[in-house]
Amino acid sequence: EVQLLESGGGLVQPGRSLRLSCAASGFTFGDYAMHWVRQAPGKGLEWVSGISWNSGGIGYADSVKGRFTISRDNTKNSLFLQMNGLRAEDMAFYYCAKSGRPEYSNAWYLDYWGQGTLVTVSS
Amino acid sequence: DIQVTQSPSSLSASIGDRVTITCRASQSINTYLNWYQQKPGKAPKLLIYTVSRLQSGVPSRFSGSGSGTDFTLTISSLQPEDFATYYCQQTYSIPWTFGPGTKVGIK
Image (cartoon, rainbow over all chains, first blue to last red; front, side):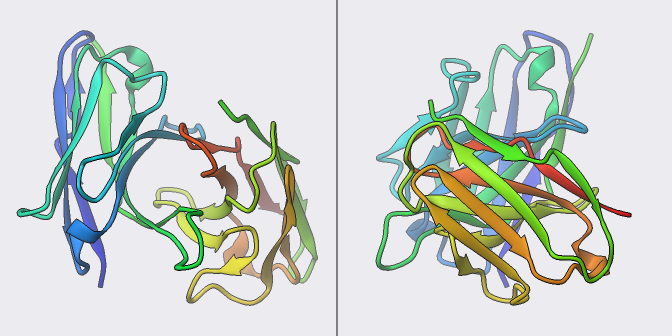
């Protein structure tokens, strides 16, 4: 059974840093790209960042580029999100998600999600 | 960036109703369009990928169609467990973008 467990959320002051982690199990972690998606309370979904299986490809939303860094450790089946310079608008539930695609296509999707970790940015 | 819109933003329907949700991309996204269902307090769940492919375990009353810029999610006969918010997502280009969501409520 695929399981994704996020941790590291909490209350942080504006301008400070936080590091999120996602522990994966139930699949061969090193074979799949992974992503972070966030959702402000009561709002919609926003893709934050993604990283390829070997860390060779990385992308960010414009809203976090230059402040957030995604990384992974395939030896520990773990995904990370280093968040620096946090702002009030970064306050959200952060979901770790596994990507998949059909064998016949590069049309990616997010087939498994964690339960999320809440990041609160407030003084 | 590719913008994704959905309509309606919310709807009320009865058990057994046929429900249709529309998703539109600001440019052609081929078949790189997915649908997710989210219930309150829960993580999103993949329903349909590449426009029309049902994720394993998803009931056949859900279906998707469309191409290019216009896509549709249809629930053929609404069930009590289908009351939720539905999001479409394009993965044609980075940054991936989601539609704003359609909340399906009880009439």
